[in-house]
Every structure is written in structure tokens, then in C-alpha cells.
Length: 411
Length: 143
Image (cartoon, rainbow over the protein chains, first blue to last red):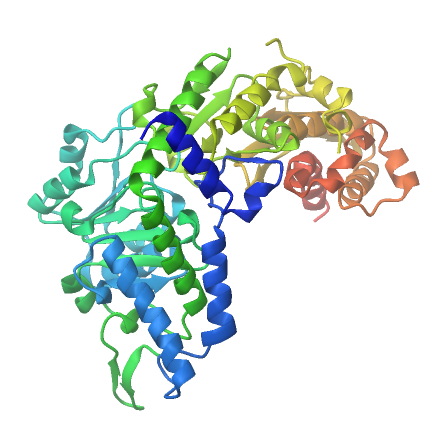
């Protein structure tokens, strides 16, 4: 596929996103992505034709709702190459997945004196649940620090691992640095140390092929809304052997086998972890989003995102007094470019760009420990999806080059 | 809203050349204010004698809006009676919520340059950071 063919394909796919038909350059895809018509239609069709409370009713409509939900689970399992659909637990988002995991797994597997290794680049949702459980259990939270380019070196990892390590929590792609961690390699080291590895896939699953069996990770968490799906549906993947031994997180309806005043038996996987009426509409939307990604293909998604990232980084380097955070090598950024404009607070940068229709994120990106580690208070972030265009990148760069001047600083 | 009404000269000037962005000598009270949406922190210091604010300053980092607003705030409360400063803080917070009368905005003098922020929910916390902190300080004094 040459550049023109890619451009034409992107133009065609872009037309399927209603939100993108307005005059904006939406470059905040690490926060959430826009939704194609196929996802919106699938959800609408579910609610118009098949909606009932699933897993309970014996009438046909409820069975259709159940089927829609369980088909989504099968599709999600295939998408990340899980060994079985029961290894897919539907939750609200990656944050809930990580809370479920930390609360449930640590309760029975973490004791006083044990160690949990958490990388300093984790999103707050992959830091706070572990920190809370470590404190509750009297365990130690060990900080895994990447080098200045965002890479986790073997030396840094080896320093954190010991016979006391029970679990390592790490993101596959940093939501600030955009760096891809070599999870397969890290998982080998972690397993050799006798510990488990939990991977935050919120920024990786939407942008690259993630195969949990190839990576050999014990757990993987991700959100539907960052991969063209709706908000309110997310996934915790876990190897069956671990999930089976874990206690429930939320208690209530649908997660039981039998309940009597003096004895309770919980449901089998995956329902043990899905208390209450589940989000079938969301699961149907996620399923349609997976179909959409499969239809577009990783070749187009990754090629286009690489072109956009390279263009953005080269352009930023051409503007004076802007510093790119993390690696200076564009190949190290998986669709995410974080930067600081000298003298100008990131909120002002994002506000000024926002007034021209360029949507970027400013702040600490829910990664304050990483901000401390990098020695910055907050930063600006542009993040791409394959539906973004080179024209949008140029529009972003043009507005960015005006920011210092508009605030009264020399260019 | 047009860029100029928002990042107007009053704001950019107070941001680039703040008059009171420094620690003061022997403050009687100081308090830290945090904007949780961006993590910005400022510390406001005041010197109070016989119910009158005789000196003030602030230190910390933040966006142009928060820094300019805090600088204007300190400028206005120096020399004011404590209760007058609190009255101004009340006016300012009302203005940002879009609830102030023209007279109340008038009393705010230069701080009235930030009135358009009432249309920008994302920046409200930036604008009120300094005023809110001083309001809390005075409430603490009165306890």
C-alpha cells in the first residue's frame, strides 16, 4: 500500500465517524476515541430489537440479550487471543478492572512483608489500588523507574524483583510517554522471579495487536471507549488458573450459584465477577468496535498513526522553546506526543488551541508520580488515532507556533 | 468567545509581570490552595494588623489565568479590612458563577477583567484559586 492509497482509505474510514464531521482537529484519542456509525448502530439495534435482562429470563428476548452479551465475550477473547471466553470479565473500564484485580487478588495473595512492584509511569488507576492494598496488608510498594527515554531496562527491573515480589503492575504503553514496554520480555523476568504480571493495556489494545498468550501476561486491563467502543464497558482478562482462585469483588445478583442464610456458593467464571445487571449494550458496542478494528486492520492503523506521530514530532522540533517529554526519537512514541511550551502553562496552551478547534489534553494526565519523576508539574499531550489526518497535524502545529506570542512572550 | 476578551491585556500583563508573586516577610497567616484538576498549587501569605491586611504575596506555579487572578487579588486586598477582602472574594466567586450584579462586578475593579471566565467551566477553578484560598484563610481567622 502506498501513501496515496493509505490516505484515501483513511479519508473513507473517517467519514464513518459522525463527530469528526465538524470543524475540529480531535487529537485527544488517548483520553477517548470517537465512535464509528457501526458501533452506534449496533447499540441502537440491540436496544431496539433485543433488549431484556440477560442471563435470567427464559423467554426468547432475554435469550437474545444473553447471546448478544456472550457473543461479545467470545469476540473479545478472540481479539486478545485469550484461551477461553471465561477469562474475559466485563467491567466498566480499565480503572474498575484494576480495582477488581487489586482488591480481590491482594486479599488472599499479599501478606505483610511481601512486595508489589509498580512502575512510576502508571496511570493513577494502576497505582492507587495497589498502594491502598499494600498499605492495608503491610506490604511494600516498590517503585520501578524507567530511564529518561521512558524505557524499562533489565537492570532497573532486576533491582526491583526479589523473592518477596508477588506481582508487577506495568503499562504496555505509557499514556504520557507513549513508549511501548516489551511486556513479553518483562513477563519472562517477572515469572522467573516467581511473581505474576498485570498489564495495563488501556493505551496498547486500541493501537496494536495484543496477544495475551504470546505476551504470557497473567492479567490485562483495558477500556472499550479508547478503542472506538462506548464508554462504560471495559475488560479484565486473567488466566483462568488465577481468576478461579480469586474471591468476588462486587457481591450481589447474578454472581451466585446458591444463596441461603448460612451458606453461599458463588457462580463460575466469569459471572462470579459480574454482579448486578450487566452492560449488554456496552458489550455489543465493544463487539462492533472490535469488528471495526478487524475490518480496518492493524496495517492501516499502525502505519497511519506512525505517519502522524512522526509529522507531529518533527514539526514540534521545528518550533522554538517547545520540549518533547520522554524519548526524542519519534519511533519510541506510540501515537502519543507529550510536550511543554516554555513559560506557558499547559492549561493555557490547551485553551488557546481549543479556541481554534484543536483538541489536546493538558494537565498531569492522571500520572502525577510520573510528573514528579520527570520533574514537571503538568504537560500538554497530543494523541492520535488512525482517523486523524496530516492536515490536522499541520493545523495543530500552526496553532502551537502562535501560543507564546499570544501570551506576550517572544517567539 | 474571542481570544482577546479572555486572555486580555490585564491577564497577560499580571501573568508576565506579577506584582505580588513572592514570599513576604513574617506573614501572620498562610495557606496552600490546590487546583485538583491540574495539580497546580499556590501558597497565599498575608500580614494582618488590627483587622487590616497590611501586606500579602503568593508563591507557586500555575496557568496564566490562575497567576493573574491571584496577583490581582493580592493587589486588591492589601490595605483592605479583613471583612472587605472577604466581601470581595464573595463577589469574585459570584461573578465567576455568573451570579454577580453589575454593581458587584464594578466593586471588583481590575478583577472584573476575568468576568468572561464564567462562560468557561474548565477554567473556573484556575480563576478562583487565589480568591478561594484567601476566603478560607479569613474564615480560619474568624474561628
